[in-house]
Image (cartoon, rainbow, N blue to C red; front, side, top):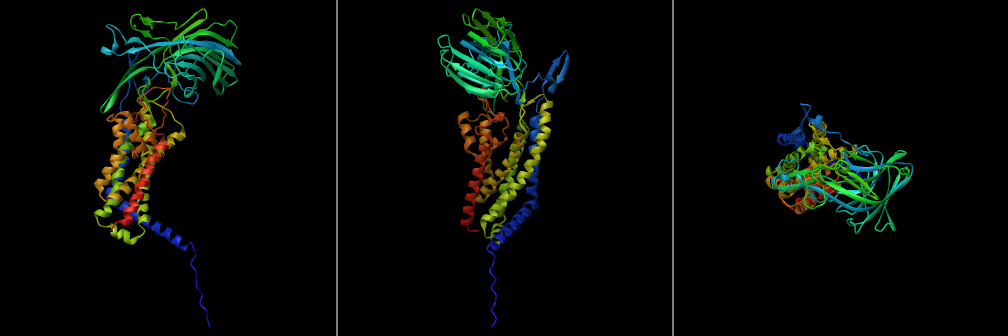
Length: 554
């Protein structure tokens, strides 16, 4: 008798067949996508909008100036732009009373008071009759500051570490423009002075503060790599621009002018400096006292006309008056420079996103409109695979279109911004890659979200309307000041529009007062956190779409 041989299938044979089947499904969906002329044209339009709208935003406006009766344009009008140790664009303008310090040493002071003045934009802009600038009135900006500093030299952008009192933010230790460490809270006054100390040991600088000059607290230690043997040490004072921002429907307007701060110091001791050395006063970056038009009668503040010295020494008391700031430059109203960011060249991606959302939603809803959904699901009973294939094809097409368009927009737009006289805030290569690739990923995930909505709602108009209302509308409500800042920020945290944060290249700095809004490229969530919110919405839309597909009567 002959016994037959029974062949047992391999355990993974079904899985291999499933993978092969899904690959064929992907190819089928891709064929559908590329053979519909309207969808291909839609993607092409999205690419064109991303590039040309971005270039228009980058090239919109050029500065003009005149020197020696010669009219200059664009970047020829820019002043010297200092850069910090990390390569960031910085403002480095303050009045500095200093001595050289060779090797290790320290400086200790008692800060007796901090006062100042800022422009008064009253009637007629606060300009007195026959005056050339706004009237000065007593007052301090929140980040007006005075204190002690160890600085590589008196050149703008050189490395430094400083201990300071501020108007509204207590004692701070700041270093190399972007670093900031909090010390004692509260303001300084004659009744409540603050003692500050800085010590240098090689490249290491340590800051201390004290409320009584006896009990000291270490605020922080920083490394200033490459400090020369001889540095400059002393007292400083400075105050950022005073800016008034008026928001209205559709935008905002700003007016600003320099303010100034005056620090009064006592009990100044410096070890390691030349014995009996004299104090030299330097207005670093032109940060000396302003020329004031006047102050309210009987009030402390600048007199009419300049105070050229900005530094006085009477007995054991030192007074330093300065204007400007020691901080990174940010985009927006707080900047004294015409700044731009790399993502401004990608402004067109916001418009291109709308075209991609329309195509992605129709990629699914067209199946219902033409009655092809039954054929599709009959050929592929696993409805989750159909949904996944459509989402992958739409996302891949959107990503490729977005990546190519973003690379072109940034490559052409950033040089255009520079030639027009904008200071493009520098970022690292990794940040630039994140912004460009992130923009493409933003479009891809938005396409997935639209595919999910199309599968749920089954109608193109409804799916496109909901996608635009959740991705585009929250940004417009925030950027155009239609909603108050609080509700607008929350919308950009919890709606799919949060994904736009992936384009932000420059972080906000709490030590620089500015209007950090979406219109200026700032979002309430960090880049990847905002992108994660969009991904969660897309995943939720796909999950709900899968449930609807399984339960519907196809």
